[in-house]
Length: 287
Image (cartoon, rainbow, N blue to C red):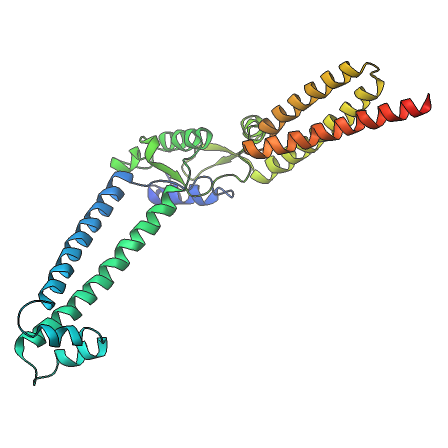
């Protein structure tokens, strides 16, 4: 191993391999769901304890000596601050004001930490897991390069706890199929391991082209077939067949949701029905 390869071994080499993936799919990491849940539980427990402490302080405010004075002070925060530093008020009243200030500061700090943790976990939970192709490539490269040791070498083993920071823009079945058969360019890493790589833009370009051709074929092909059919029942059977094939193709070559597939199929079938109706009216007027 030369000096350059030695420098690139370990975390530097893995970092370079991740960065060399221009599509960003190699940014796969553990999200530590179990520890994240534990952290939220701890923060929640601290919030519950603080809530009880605040409730006790509020109860003490409305009881004991100086009840009326403290209730009057609690209507104005500036007065609370002033009375906490006023040597002319009673020690008990001053301590209650100081306690309110301390509770407010603790609440502000802990609430911010708790809400930030909730927001971050919500964002992390919305991220998807890496697909099998990326995960298989990553694992094969790590095993071949043998560049990480210890626990870091096993971080891909927990598939359910992995998160991909970036997913391909097109995640339909057609794009996934193209990714599996697409000819990839071979790249040699610093450790001498050869890996295959292709640009995601090429997949998107060809997937869009195929989708356009399929849509054009379904529209033109159905109209041509309906034009040469004479029997009305056969025409409606043909419309049903083309509509079913159209819905199936939407599910395969696009990532449309079920309501979108339903709406697009209904519009497509309506176009064919209108064409058949106009054709029938034209033939009747011609006779």
